Image 1 (cartoon, rainbow, N blue to C red):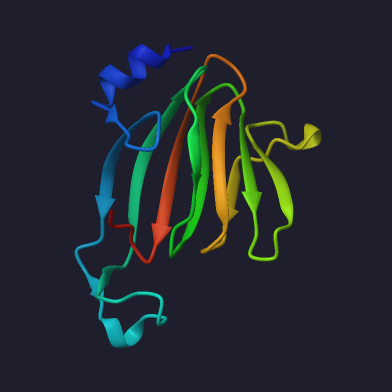
Image 2: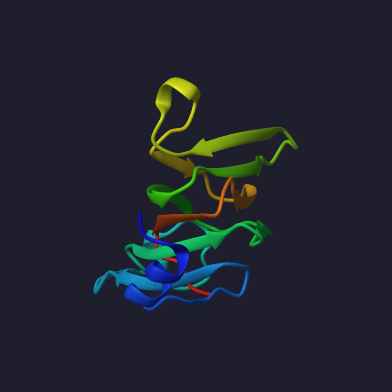
Length: 137
């Protein structure tokens, strides 16, 4: 198994402003015009974006929310927990990993507008995050 440092170096990950390491690896060359998007989007967006995202043992992806749905895909390392609070204040803990029998799913989708935070349950976790419509800071 590779280490966090191996992945950071191999994938050329950079520090993420909300914690951890990332690299954008896909941004659709096509965009959705404003009039084709829900009102929560003030301007056109790419159809989709995707990143690699790595959290080490002491990293936290702090609570935040985005305007699009975001799907997290497990790639390597230890399982990850994603804490979600929906618009009604209901809490849910999602487990990302490769053991569905124990509740660790290889893919988890966070609906738009929900507050969420994540942390690795071990030394590190490497995931992919796909957002549609695409994410912009």
